[in-house]
Structure formats: C-alpha cells, structure tokens
Amino acid sequence: MRKTSTATKTKTASRSSVARKNSHSKVKQASSDLDSSNDLLRTTPLTTEDRLAHIHALGQRVVSYVKFMCTVTRLEGSSAESKERAVAVFYDRLAPYGQWVNSPTHIRQWFQSLMQPDNPAQSCCGEGDAFEADNWEIEEDGTIVAIITDGKGTVPNGTRVVVPDRKMKWDAGNPTGHGIIFLTSTYQAICYVTPGGV
Image (cartoon, rainbow, N blue to C red; front, top):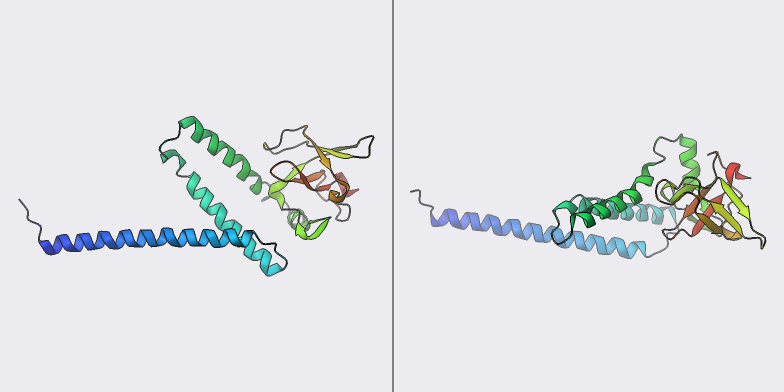
C-alpha cells in the first residue's frame, strides 16, 4: 500500500485552496464587471465614445447570456420542457441579430445610420429590432398603422402596429425594397420607414 507523505497532502490541499480562491476571485470580478456594465447601460450615450462603450457593454452582456444558455441543460430543478422553451425563446430573440450579415454594405450602413426622428441623438436600434412592414394604412382618424409582413419568426405576420407621426422616418430614403419598422420588445414603434422611403 502506497503511503502519502504529509508534505504531499499539504501541497495538494494548498493547490486546491489556491484554485478555489482563483475561482472565487473570477466570480467576484465577473460580478463587478456586470454591475459596471449595468450602471453604464442606464446612462444615455451622447457621443461616439459613449456609444462605443455601450456597444462593448452590450456585447459583454450578450456573451454572458450565451454562456449561461449553453449550460441550461445541466441546470437542476427545472423541467426539460421549461429548458426547451427557454432555449427556443432565447434563440428567437438572438437570431434576428444575424439576419443582415450577408446584406450588401450599403444596406448595413443604411440600417446603422438611422436615427430616431423624434430623438436624433438615438439610433433606431440596429437591424436586430427591424422587421418588414410592407403594408401600411391611414385610419379615419389619421392614425398610421404599419402591418408586419415579415416578423422574422418573432413578431406574427399580420400584426398591426400603431405608428405615431413622430415615429415616421421620412428623411433617410430606403434602399431595402421593403417597409422597415423598428420595434421595442413590447411591439411599440421606434421608427418606421415606408417601402421605398416615400
């Protein structure tokens, strides 16, 4: 029977203790970084540097969400059905962000340059929040309603979205060949560019 010396046991325990401390330190650092990012994202970006800082913080947040979702099948205390539903919802929210990757450069640049008509310092939010709304109507009381024609699997086609006058984007043209509407997560209009930009 092999004997283990006290010195070896001490070294092993010491290594284990160091590993635990390093792991704990990384968790604390990650938590601190997340708190800093959350504080930053509560502010309004006013300059290019501010927007770049926000983009970086949002990227960190997305990476942390993706890492978490990749471990969801190993979580205890949730049913397989709940896990499947969570993954499906997360995928549906994430997938649109890649929808314009293969678009021509001028289309991507157009999306990136769009600013909110009633708040010119704020972006219309980028391609991820954009959906096609080729049809629109003006109701009897003058209300503009955009009708979703391609909700990218996130917004049901045929959904009618009231667009306040201040959210109509008339000054940026439209090279996509489609009406484009930017929506919040509760389907409120941020910007609407009619087909052809007319």
